Picture 1 (spheres, rainbow, N blue to C red):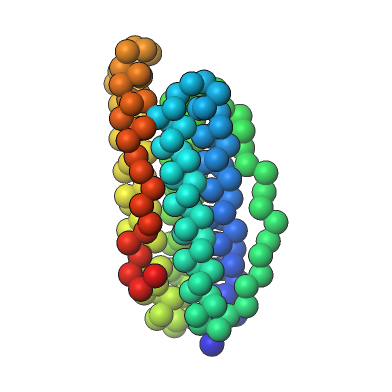
Picture 2: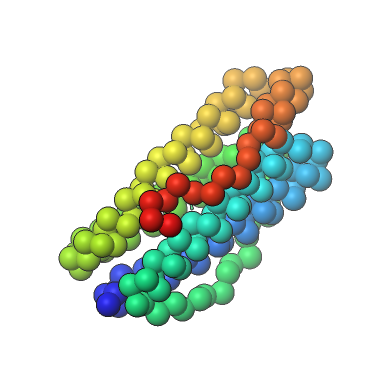
Amino acid sequence: MLNKNVEGILNAQINKEFYSAYLYLGMSAYFEQLGLKGFSNWTKVQAQEEMEHGMIIFNYVQERDGDIELQEIEKPDNDFQNPLQVFEKILEHEKEVTSNIERVANLSEDECDRATRHFINWYISEQVEEEAQVLDVIKKIKFFGTDCTILYHLDKELEEREYKSSNYPNK
Ligand code: FEO
C-alpha cells in the first residue's frame, strides 16, 4: 500500500510530466512555423518522452495499489521569440522538474518508502541527462551566434533525434 503523502506527490508529478509534454509540443509547433524542422522534431520527441515519464509513474502508483487522481493540465507557456530563448526556457523548466523530482526523493525518504526512493532514482539520472542535452544546444547556439548557415546545420543535427522508448528498468 502506498503512503498517502507519497501517493499525492507522485500524482502531482504525473501532472508535471504531462504539462512538460504540452510545453514541448507548443515549442515544436512554434519551430515548425519557422521552418526549423530539426528543432521542431527535437521538441516533439521530447514531448513523447515526457508522456512516457508520466505513464511510468502512473503505472507505478497502480502497481503499489495507490489511487490515481488526475489534475487539470495548465495551459503551457507560449511566449516564444527565438531558438535560444526557447532553449533557455527549456533549461529553466527542466531545472524546476529536477527540483520536483528531488522533492519526491526527499519525501519518500522521510516516509521511509524505500520502494519509491528506489523508483525515483531513474528520474534523478534522467534529469542529469536532460539538462546536459539542453545545455549542449544552448552552448552551440550561443557560440555560433546568428550565423544562419550554422543554425541550418544545427537544425539538421536536431532532425536526427528519434524517439526511443525509455530504458526504465522493469517498465
Ligand atoms: Fe520528464 Fe523533462 O522531465
